[in-house]
Image 1 (spheres, rainbow over the protein chains, first blue to last red):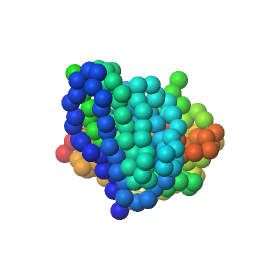
Image 2 (cartoon, chains in turn blue, green):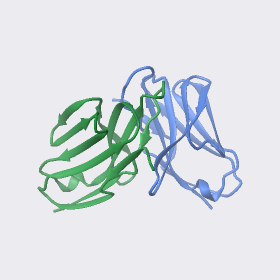
Image 3 (cartoon, rainbow over the protein chains, first blue to last red):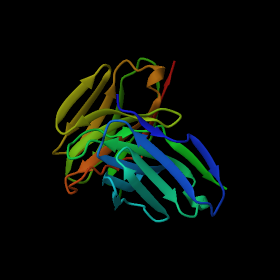
Image 4 (tube, each protein chain N blue to C red):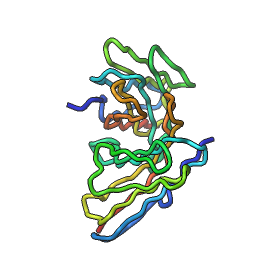
Length: 113
Length: 111
């Protein structure tokens, strides 16, 4: 079974802090994704990566950056956290180059005070 | 207008009822996904469809490509089916794995 693990279930940070959200998958998947989920808006793609050191902007990349130094790990970085980044963050992974389901982590509920 | 629309937004039913959740989309797609999200956040993939119909236990998913419409049915519903059900499409316009998501249908099954 594919396991996608997010480092924290709940996280509280202060405005202006640099915040790191970590995601690790154990199935050698090429593609990894970061989403945020807000009430009434559904899941929105922040960034995705299709290989080590490769990344592409999603629909809402502003205020975020990502890092993929190893295939199994995809990090989301909030450079200077703001209150409008309070949200549920979900990581997902999938095999590259094929029409396969995405496998999701349990999510990180991030509050910026 | 969202590319993926789900209806209803909220649905409450008695245990045992037959449930239908609808998804309409406006773009050409290569696949449609149905996902389930339980309280607490984790998302599980239920089905991936590109044509026809799929069944898994009490869950049935259908898709009509010409009408750009999919339905998720639950037979003999049970309180453990209470969750948010999310429709997502992979657009044929993208050469990658990006999905566009509906806003979800919150299902509550009352014992």
